[in-house]
Image (spheres, rainbow over the protein chains, first blue to last red):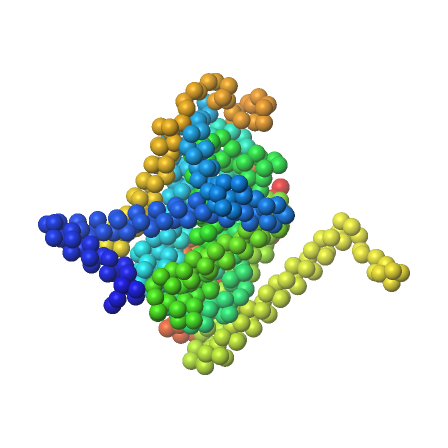
Length: 398
Length: 117
């Protein structure tokens, strides 16, 4: 086992030797090493988070045909540090009628709910915070803390905008959790485990090729979970100022903002772990652990970029349409997909891999096509109710 | 068990970082509160009545529907983990379970609970 293959174990053994050499009991040394590891991981995440602020601003400006931050440092790279200094020296205003305890806890919980998600993210074959065998459930459980922080922020602010924003956001988050949970079941079925490391290791064929529709539904549900456009009516700035974080200023607002960006990046990572092979790419992960980390970061950035792309392309959807879309379209579709995958998995047990993979792929495509056709015919009917039947012969005159 | 100690460490460190950042900013930032600054922000207009308004009953309905589905979907996880080892019968059993869930969804739908009124 060389350093390049398993840096975590080498470093842990080295530190263990030092700490026990100091006369520390083994269990205390282990916990201390764990603490140091977690501290390093989370500090690197915060650093990444600062970089994400720059990425987000640069990408949005490119989408909107602007240049974006370009004054402070090369390509404006120092801009987020300037932002942080600005946030730090801002006054921390607590509105008069606010519930102070809840108001102050909410931004901390918001950031924490994102950071603890990284406990189960496999960064390389042997580099993972905790290889929980219920990783998929842990994601949902940790995400629920984020929901909690939003309702806390909205309720405690003593502001109508914040409260309405929080209501909307929570309604959306809990609703879209159903298709998301269901789509987490699909990699679980393929891998035979809920552990994210096991799911990654089983992906000799990326699961996106087995269940492309599942990957798509997971992405949609993840975007809704993040509260990003087109599902961002919780912070619809034209109606609610900023939604649940209207009353927050300074570093507390910064925590919500940074938490949201890191959350989006994290879900890009989860998307790549569940459906795009995680740290695996052409056997690179066996060569060097750091290459594996580079691969998963790269894939997470691609996922994050797609989430941003959707955010800056589509417009906001009304809340009733959104909940209707979830409960009347996405939820039945995801349950149907789950049944199809489970049944196909049972029937194709023991068949060659190519047959298994291609039948899964085709069944997904067929199901997606049927769902789209149903949605299309329904929306045509709805449109005709409002606009009347479409004139057919019009095109002929041009 | 030791796994959960590490999860606990993640919770602790994950809380220390934001608490530290907010405390640091609170120490450095100015503290000049006044009633107008602390009043509820509503785009410059005085707030009318209570800020803790009544919420729409629809949110409650959606929360209820969510609760049913969330709890029942969690039951599906053990089934999904062992699916490849289970026989066709157990798979069909699971599908019947999902169908019962869908019947519940159809019932809610037909009752008009999914409409935003």
